[in-house]
Amino acid sequence: IFLCGRKGEQTEHGREQTHREMMQTVQEMKKRLPSEKRSRSKASTVEALNYALNCVKQVQANSEYYNLLMSSGLEKRRNATVCTLEELEGITSDHTPKNTDTFVVVFSLASGKVVYASEQASSVLHCKRKFLESAKFVELLYHQDVSVFYSHTAQPRLPPWNMGTDTAVLFECAQVKSFFCRIRGGKDRDGEMRYSPFRITPYLLKVQGSSAEEEPCCLALAERIISGYEAPRIPMDKRIFSTTHSPGCVFLEVDDRAVPLLGYLPQDLIGTSVLTCLHPDDRLLMLSLHRRILKYAGQPPFEHSPIRFRCQNGDYVTLDSSWSSFINPWSRKVAFIIGRHKVRTGPLNEDVFAARSRAEQPVMCEDVKELQAMIYKLFLQPVHNNGSSGYGSLGSNGSHEHYISVASSSDSNGNLWEDSHREPVRLRVHVKSLMNVGLSGPNEGSFEL
Image 1 (tube, rainbow, N blue to C red):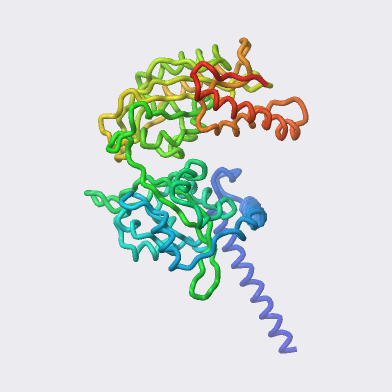
Image 2: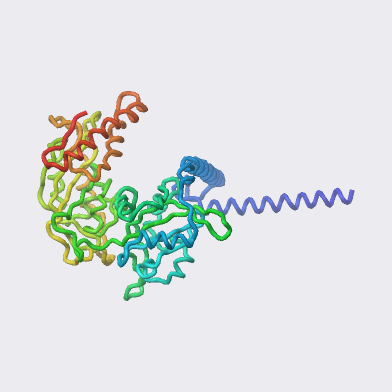
């Protein structure tokens, strides 16, 4: 009886301890519950538990998706080149141009740690090679570029490294699969960390360590981007780039060629307002411009008044621009606007990557919001002119296929699956021919379904 009583007391004590721990956990969850998830000022236990359950489900879903993603890239990983650390030295000497702002870094896809860095890396980044080879590569990146880095270096997306590929071909392919990130490179006079922009081209390979195990790694070719207005300067007739924005004046796409001309990386502009980047005195021009875009929707591109565009360093460049638009063939509304821009006059400070003061940061003021709303309302009406469904010839690298596919399927009255899988293919054929036409002349370029 004594033993049974003792055992019962221990069980009761254990239950109380478990209950206390559970209540502490619930209280902790309540503290961490986002304010928008609360029905009142104080979070309830049910709300906290529901939120925790949803988080668990999300983690499980992400895990399942990751496993599916990994299995889809299995064949690619099997074909990846296997090399030792010693062989990496030979690879980098063969594929890294001498006396340039280019280096090679290899990092583990499992731990993120740098496995190898080429000779040039320490001089380009102004740090010791020993430090590089003990760091996680992502820790060297500017915090706003981390998500871009991860999205482009997901293992299933990486093309396998080919030992037989020469340098020219590697950098020629950079426009297709490369991305931009800022990497730290020493400190400025005020002791602030300095970041420089790089074009990074990632490849998949396996590195064989001392234990003979093959570790999946990413070999990244990093090329520093310098201002297009500093030596060696981009010629005047080559200072051209293109953009795509929504009817609400939000950047959807920015051409890679804009980086050395404006100082922004694509991710800096995408999702932001076009109007905040313009000189305050030129913003009203955008209203008349978009009225004209609506009037000539689907027609060949036209030129409009020059506009002053703010560079990353706070100075302005003057752009001569041609404009065109794409009409959704089902809703007959303008789906997006394409601009082709040529720099007429450069910035006062030719270093477009120079830091600017916080006071010069663009602000979304009420006037800009009102103007943006007015422009958006213009495009709520369908287009009833004789323009064909499509857009002019001034796209950027043919990458508008994604937007065309979305626009062509979203408002269809037919079978959604068939529309989204069959019609965009037809459109892509027209787009490719359209891009070729665009190279031959500015007045050719609209197309019909």
